[in-house]
Length: 307
Image (cartoon, rainbow, N blue to C red; front, side):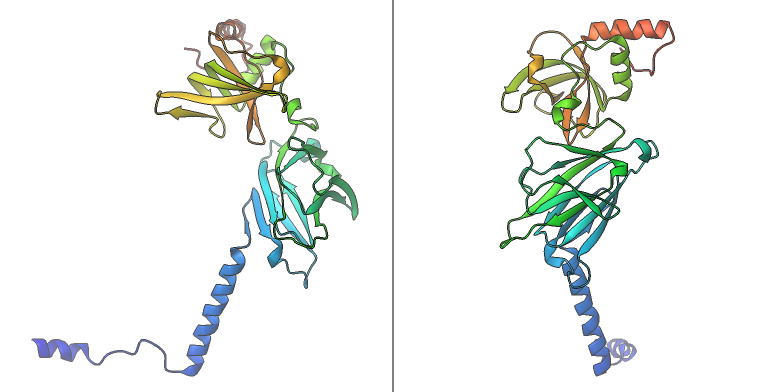
């Protein structure tokens, strides 16, 4: 049986090609694979975010690189900037009309190494100078004003330079500061509350556990303990295993004078560059009255469970 098995197996097969030409082709294919892998490690992109490095910028072929992003929000991060980029932003949904579209960018805290311009028909208009932005400053412009032209500034040492920003596309009016996205320090009307319930990025019933004031930022951070989660975006509120309850933080203007206290509220608001900003926050019993009145008159813009 052993002899039969050996006879069937036959002589050992050669694992590598003996032809020098085949060996050369295999080597070239392996080298090409390594080069592509190295290049991709310096560059990554999807429909919403772009990350690249000036170290791989092909200056001998082109000085300006085109970047296309199709998303309502995302980020651009350019390490060791050299040359220039043109950032073409487009919405990813038909609900955002280009005609009334506003684009806002918020530079990273330590962004430096490049100027950011608006470019249209070959003309440049400075939007953000290299290192000239404040930590909370947001720069907005209309969609029809042009694309973003990011040009590296002359640097003797680019090793620590990173130019980057977050962006958002909305149909809202232009805003220049994060504070403008918070509603004025006044109670919302019944109509505003009902509309906020239908359109906000987060809607929760809960109580105020703590308020931290930040005078330098002119804002207050509200710690919320949630008793009912209706809707949220970007996981603002998370389930805490220690207390088995949902908790999260919302920001609002310092001048509103928010203080911790008893009672349940209905908190509504929007996400803006990763921050949860408060909109309307009536006491829950007042919201129930508004909702039932509108429901009885057939004026509710949407339905929400009030139990």
